[in-house]
Amino acid sequence: MVAAALTAVGTAPVVSASAVPASNRGQDVTVVTFNIHHGADPDEALDLEKVAGVVRGSGADIVGLQEVDRHWSSRSDFIDQAQWLADRLDLHVAYGANLDLDPAQPGDPRRQYGTAVLSRHPIVDAHNTLLPRSEAGEQRGLLEADVLVRGKKMRFLNTHLEHTSQAERLSQVKAINDIVDDSRLPTVLVGDLNATPDTEEVGVLTEQLADTWPLAGQGDGFTYSAESPYERIDYVLTSPGIKARQAQVLSTNASDHRPVRVELSLP
Image 1 (spheres, rainbow, N blue to C red):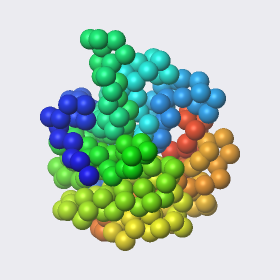
Image 2 (cartoon, helix red, strand yellow; image 1 turned 30 degrees about the vertical axis):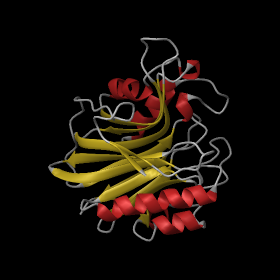
Image 3 (cartoon, rainbow, N blue to C red; image 1 turned 135 degrees about the horizontal axis):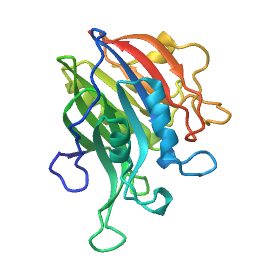
Image 4 (cartoon, rainbow, N blue to C red; image 1 turned 45 degrees about the vertical axis):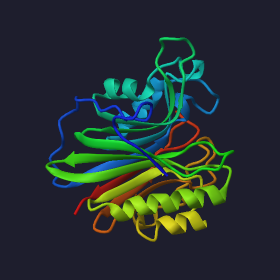
């Protein structure tokens, strides 16, 4: 496990200073997790504006995005997608690069791929931790953002686990559990876990965190695929003391996943 500090080249999250006014609902906060598939729909048509519309329409206070390109390639027009969405929606942003490559042309920005956090509330600290992987596996990470919600800090974690190996996912969730165990703040973990609720890796995570869907959602909660959902692999998990009031899967074809929206009450 490798910690990527704010000053580390290539893995440093970017934090923006602008945000829309916070709501006045005590310690209630609405969160969304959304694997945006680098802004492409199930037919691979790039439409980041559509992703922005989904986030805007959700009314979320904090959003965890997975599969976010930053100057990555022509598939996303070499755009910094995290910053573009933050600017479009007037939100704070933190970015964690799990893949970090040299630019296609000398002098261009580095090519990065990873996760992002968008927030209406100020992000006061953020860093990305690289998770364990095999030699053949893709590098994954855990993006941690401390968010100031109406004067109270909470920790928002965002991840995207390995999809090809359960053994690798297990090593990754154990590393995440160690980080969660060290947190003294109300903590929310979101992400594409690439695992269904009956798997061992989800069982490991829910030793410390509560799965909000059985507590506040209705129906199967399937999130993948977007066009014909047949499995639940996208989650919002919370530490003790956080109450899940309502959970729903949002119907959209802006990506190959559907987002999950959960209304929470912080302790």
